[in-house]
Amino acid sequence: MNILIAEDDAPSRLILQSLLTKWGYTVTAVADGDEAWRILCEPDHPLLVILDWMMPGIEGPEIVRRLRVKEGSTPHYVIIMTSGTCENTPVLALDSGADDFIAKPFNHAELRARVNVGCRITHLHEALAEKLHKLESASETISRLARTDELTGLHNRRSFNESFTLALSSARRHNHPLSLISIDLDNFKRINDTFGHSTGDLVLKEFSDLLKEMVRIEDIASRWGGEEFIILLPNTSRDAAVTLAERIRSIFENQASSAKPLSVTASFGVAQLQNGENEDDLIRRVDNALYEAKREGRNRVVAY
Ligand SMILES: [Mg+2]
Image: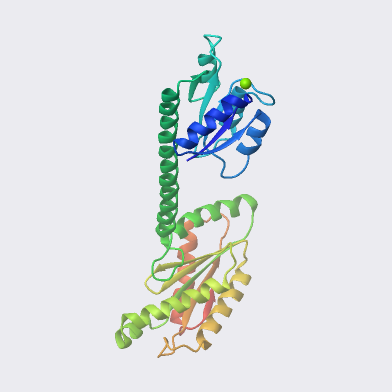
């Protein structure tokens, strides 16, 4: 464990340094408050700090106050050394934010015990910070998984619905266009029945990769379920959505792939949000357009 000592009195500093080194600590010793503060502003500085109350430059209590303001997830453990002439100094030291104090001239056994407490608490803080970090990253993963379709890596239905509600309210407020593309792979059941589900899964993945490639960062390409997909396109007119759907349709139709033993195509419905419509109305219209594309012979784009 690293310890920073700031003490202007040279003999005291040397004694402290040699005792702490003898007890197995790694010590950085400085003679004034400005130098102590400079070290405490460096990355990876010692978290266990022993400060003299009065010294040139920034004094002990002021260093503690500054530390407490900038402290992150791993707090410092600060022991202030008081000269013991005023009976009020321990109270002032603790009130300034210090964790502990020790009166000079110090008793070696007491110093050792107090530094050991600081060391123990600093280790606990570090372990807690590491656990918190792991917890945060696990919670990020959980939240990402909850919004992602496992097979394709696209947004799932829940994620689509969240984004849809927000995008709809933003489109209404700013009077921006918003469109949906609803997609269904043609004759998909035949692939699964003839070649098995793993081939079917490969086709779904390839189509999803194409969607990811084709949409903008602000679009939400989602797997609606089975072989159905839906793309939310904020700030997009019906005509622009039709153009995008037609490009996806044509690329997919012509994409050579080992995962497509049969030629697989896709049908597309497109609709743009109209005044006074809610989520369900728009979904109903885009699904009607998709139904029409299927009815007209599949492998085509129909706009409502
Ligand atoms: Mg002093």
